[in-house]
Length: 252
Image (cartoon, rainbow, N blue to C red; front, side, top):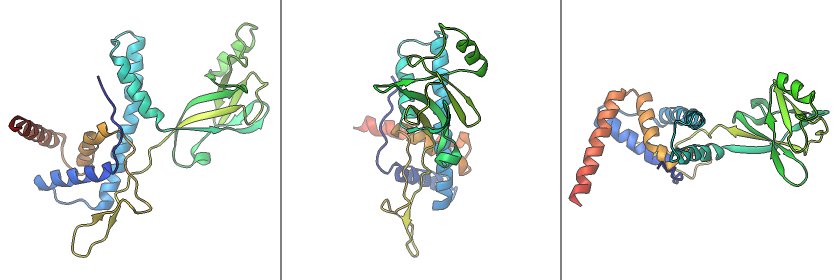
């Protein structure tokens, strides 16, 4: 069963130490803190976006009944990681049953995608169904399928959300849950004259990775790739490390 471990404090320092060690052993030289931070940002983004691909892949397998019951835990694990980047906020009311949805312009650069739209009926939050413009026209023309406070719906065009039924017309009635990008990781340090920079997690701009601990090996591999190592070389390093770990375990 796949288990997503919680992120540990200062994972970024552990990742950097391993990356520098591997590069040094393989004569790839040294990467500066600024280059490491650049590679770390891209590596984290790659893995972050892969969570959505893997989640959708598992959902499609379940829908096609191509996966066993054990795979439900995998889907749940992906969902929990994605939900950790969830932000909920009220939508800006424009006019009758129309609202502005979050965008990079309104939320800053952290906006990634809309996850859910919620209707506040006064007692609880109910998830609204997103439908196409053609489907909402069909639904509205039927007494049996028309959206209601019990079964609300919405459409989106550009940055405008239209809520149904059209009695939904208050800024406090509609909330949006969007997924934000992970914060850019930054390994911060104290400058030392004539020596290695010393890790400093107390710096104001320090930022650790926001991914689970399970992703540490993936982060290391991707950063090594961005630093110039080939996949074959990284695989050789991983094999050597696995063999070394096995030998250590056998000796205990």
